[in-house]
Image 1 (cartoon, rainbow, N blue to C red):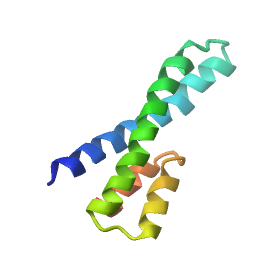
Image 2: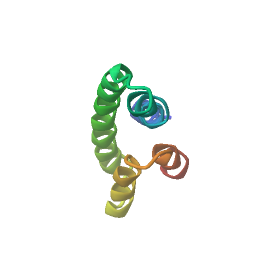
Image 3: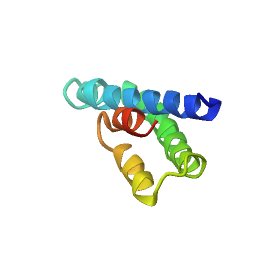
Length: 92
């Protein structure tokens, strides 16, 4: 497997995990137990991974000759919990 595809798979997994941690752990800590600290750190990491994921999806669009529809699906999946895992299985 190509190094760039492996890198995108890693970024995709990390982005999905950070989103799940943000939604499932950090947000409840902030809004239920008034502990916003985790949202700040996990939110920043997730934001960086999100940008890397979108840029990686654009790169994969060009490298793997994805259709425009596949690119749009990949980008939309970045805002859905577990979405990046779907992209890994379906397109990579």
